[in-house]
Length: 292
Image 1 (tube, rainbow, N blue to C red):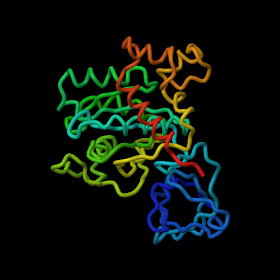
Image 2: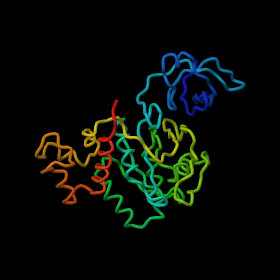
Image 3: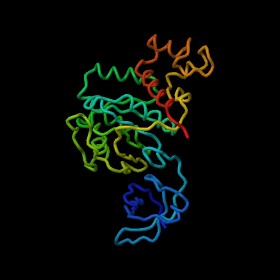
Image 4: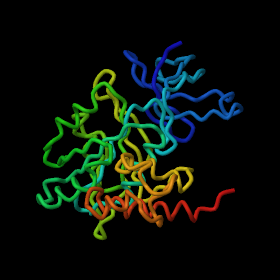
């Protein structure tokens, strides 16, 4: 009987890393399916019946989880590193804000990394800094291609299990290669229309150093919002927190109400208009969502 961590799952097979022994290809007991327990990448498990020659075994127990993500699906994650390119492709701020809402909904601390800073000028950097200055997340800039700013990225990952998330073409795989100091992931170019090719096809965990893991996940071009009411969305925008209770109406959602302190802060430039416009877009989407 050995304890290990699921680092990859493909077509019903799970690859479990056991300290000092290596990686074993395992099948999960049928009882998990009967109990409707879904095995996740990142699960700490007990494996038995090891065949040392062929490096295969069976997962007999899934240990209690400290966290469970809905999307990307993973267990025992400490933080998220949400990666967008600052240019090539241009950042989709609506998609980024969806990520931030989803990670906050799952109580996961989030770091935003804008990659490809070597391709951007100072005005582009200042623009995104201004947009996300009060979003409640740590903001980093780096260039994986030129290995600039990556020591700070590595430092923030140490001692934690971090899930890397973001759309395709932003350099997640190149960043993973650098952090692991080997060419682990296949990398792809950005297509002519500016969309990244999907080079990560499954979630997989890699060990940087002892107790430091990164989980690379498939790139996303869209992301559903969590199952929340439209009126709850304001709690996922940290910029609004200081104005809670200061509007004319109790329960103000900062959309059409008069004498709204949040809207006044937007007009005064205290709250970034791009973030507020993003809020309105997501609010409208949640408002129109049919609930069953």
